[in-house]
Image (tube, rainbow, N blue to C red; front, side, top):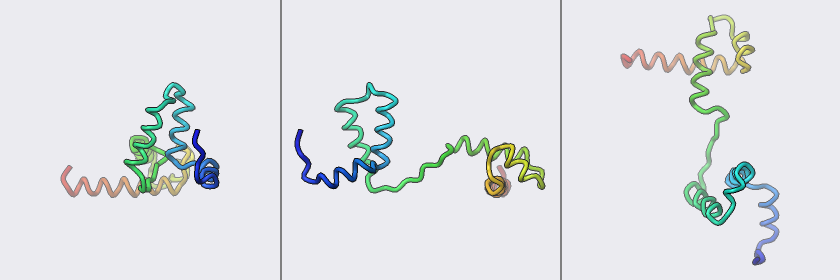
Length: 114
């Protein structure tokens, strides 16, 4: 094993791994059979492909968000935002945000004749 020329930097990186390191660590934890040289090549390929980019990773996938929006639309009667929020385990602000976004999408589809 070769010694690194930057042991302080290596120690800092080890203390606070970046997103790629954390994702690959998770994959190794869940699928230990993936360990090996190809795994390291895959990690390098991900860094080469996406290096320098900043990404936002939403907590809910788009399909789940759409289902939530549909649920809000079905339950909301114009005066029960708190009840809808409580029932769906979301905030009132999220209820109103989803109503606003869904409302603008409906208006746009009506204007386009869909």
